[in-house]
Length: 367
Image (cartoon, rainbow, N blue to C red; front, side, top):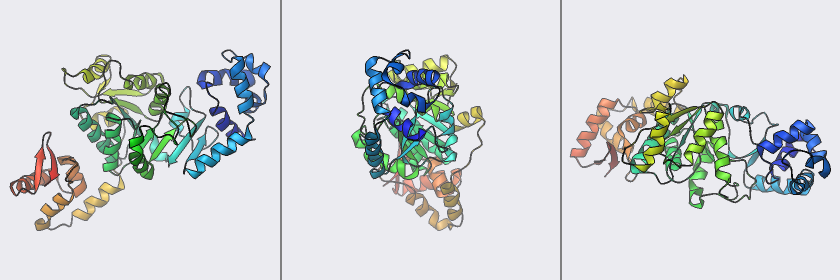
């Protein structure tokens, strides 16, 4: 059995965790010796109970279980990347407790090393959703991978913003990839996997147990250069991601919100504690010293529309709009390849012609 296979099996043993794993490796010095140890030897490690020692000893040598898990993953189009593999994300490898294995639906690229996590409340306000979607779009448009947790609310908006820019986004789950949670986000997960990746450290059939989600947050921050909190109450799970980020030496950002909103309490507390305030994507790029690398789509679209005749530019603007999903002026400009001033003038003309409609927040839809 290879060390890669031992990583997969040991990762499947419930309750091992990063702290116990470090103690096991300190005692036995290698995965091979951990998996070869008998129950009595395993029990001598601090925190390893007789029951857990039995599970480790049995699980580490269970080739049938290994074959079943690998087969299940393969049939679902999922790759298993372990700490023994070169494609394991380098930034994640540097955290104190990296997962032994990652289940990956989609692809991981070297470009994902320039990533920002966008997290926040599940019960987000319209303001928060707008901020998260716009931030996801603006980051992705500049070649930054957007990382979040596929949860309802802010996470969903951030992923969708990145997808609208046709950039990369990674979703980290608190369940196995065969137990998508929330279930209604399966279509969104498919879109993410097509141009990014859906990830989990949990075996394929792991249910979405409550204690899984705080633990997965260390992966969201570990994959990222920094974490942006869009909205959060004082007890929001997003603040757990912030704690993970600080432990890992990552930067923390927060978006200010209305002082009357409970979902602003957590972000305003972070700002008082020294988090960097975000009012635009440039605040993040400047703080981290990142140089924008526009995605190919934006450049290609711009080049195509530079040649559009003036009489056709109104049609070009209308073609960039949806009847259901509002777009900001700068997003329309990026999609059309036209200057912001020209887009604003064209939108005004189209409003008068009742071809487009303006919504609150300077967003536009096609009529």
